[in-house]
Amino acid sequence: MANIVLVHGAWPGAGCYRDTAKALRAMGHDVFTPTHTGLGERYHLSAETITLETHVRDVLGCIEAEELTDIILCGHSYGGMVITCVADRIPERIRSIIYIDAFVPEDGETLVDLIHKTLPADVAPLFLDSWRDSARRDHGGMVQPITAEMFGIDPRHHDWVDRRSRPQSFATFNSPALLSHHTHPIRDRHFLFATKWAPTPFQFYADKFRPDPAWRVVDMDTSHDIMVDMPLELAALIDGVATSRP
Image (tube, rainbow, N blue to C red; front, top):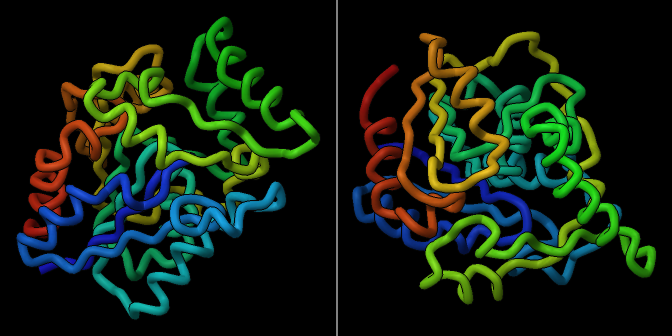
């Protein structure tokens, strides 16, 4: 079967993939869920100096330590920033890439840039101003988590998601994706779009990639946290990618 690497987004740890990872392992896949420095069970390493590059190296380190090849690389939300950089550096190890309601940066773009790029001018400041205010608080440089309710997550899961989320360094949102390739290095590309969260920056990518034959776009009738509200459906989609050859 396949080597599957699940990369989480901002604020939670890799535990958000608990049920999806369990289902994929039951299907026979080898599943790896690295947690970003400063989040989840690695919250004790939290610091305002952590950047996107730190998290890129976390995932690269997992891949190197486990000696993985022929990888299905998946990233959720902010994790799209991470997997884009990872795929750019080791494209020969990546078979397929799956963006789970995630950002897809171009060279030099920060997540802050992408909020401006993908959301209306009257909506983007609602995100960014609150993040900057949070980072300025006590000069801490940390951004408080967006709540599960704001992400449109099923109320049954609010408490579980919120108690697992931790402040994240603003520098991770304000550091650029540094890419060597002028085009996406991975040929088999998928974008999963969560249709039940609005306003969403990810409508931009669904619309952009839908007519592009190089991408497969799948609409999912759920909240932004697909792995929380539809973990088994997500596992089935990833399994479908893993068991078919591009």
